[in-house]
Image 1 (cartoon, rainbow, N blue to C red):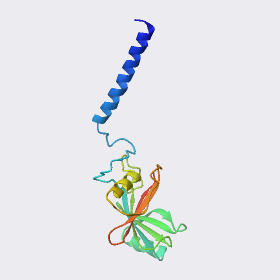
Image 2 (image 1 turned 180 degrees about the horizontal axis):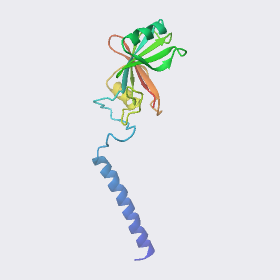
Image 3 (image 1 turned 135 degrees about the vertical axis):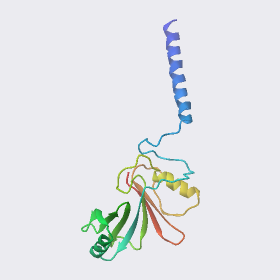
Image 4 (image 1 turned 90 degrees about the horizontal axis):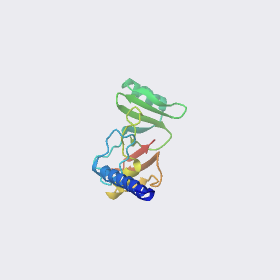
Amino acid sequence: MNIDQFAMKKLSFYILGIITAFCFGFLIKPTESISNQINNDETLENMKLGAFSVSLSVKDLQASKAFYENLGFTQFAGSMEQNYLIMKNEKTLIGLFQGMFEGNILTFNPGWDENAVELESFDDIRAIQKHLKSKGVKLDAEADENSSGPASLMLRDPDGNLILLDQHL
C-alpha cells in the first residue's frame, strides 16, 4: 500500500467517523444535565419559564416592606436606595417597585430558580418568543432573535395583565 492509498483510507475513516457521529446524534435525545440547554423547538409543549414572581408597583416602599415582613417575607435582593426590593417567603417571590412602572406585572425568569440560581436546563427566551409567535400571541416587546444571552419580552393576558419574561443569562 503506497502513501496515497494510506492517506485515502485514513481520510475515508475520518469521514465515516464524522458521518456516524452526526447520525448517532439524531438518535440520542440530549440529557437534561447539559448546562444551559436551549430548546429551539417551535412546539415547546412544556415551556420552562423559570422563577415566577409578582412585581408590584407600590406607593411607599418602606410601608410595603413592613407589611410583607409581617406576612413572613424577608428581603432577598434590591435596596431602598434603588427603589425596589425582592421579598421572599420559602419559594414565593414578590418584587416591590416604587416609581418604576404603573400596575402590577407577572414576571418569569427563564434560566433561574427561585433563588436566582442558574438552572441546568431552560428554554431560551428567543425559543419561547418563537413559540408564542407561532401560536399567534401578540407581544408588546420582543427579544432580538439574532442575539444570545440576557433578553426580555412582554405580553398581556386576555384581561390586560402585563407579563414580563426576563432572562438574565
